[in-house]
Length: 105
Image (cartoon, rainbow, N blue to C red):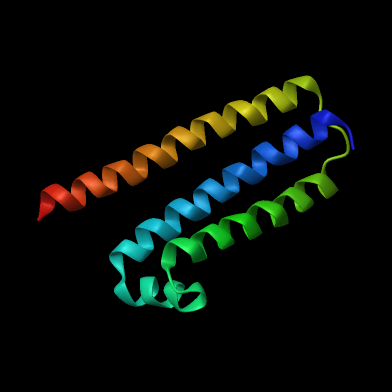
């Protein structure tokens, strides 16, 4: 597999993983039953989220690798830019949620 394809696939699978972890993290904080359901798999919801993020990353890496023949330098750079944006947005979203939860009480 060429390097650009691997970088491209890794970047977009990371974006999907960031979205999944952000949604699951906030959902688990809003729903005790969902958090307990996550904890039921491994004993702790953090461990389950870690396994989930690994599974999502690998699954989407395979999907993006299989569907993209050979990305150009420009497409790969765009994928990395999208990853940077979503990493920042995921961080800000979770941080903002926890600030809201802390100060709203």
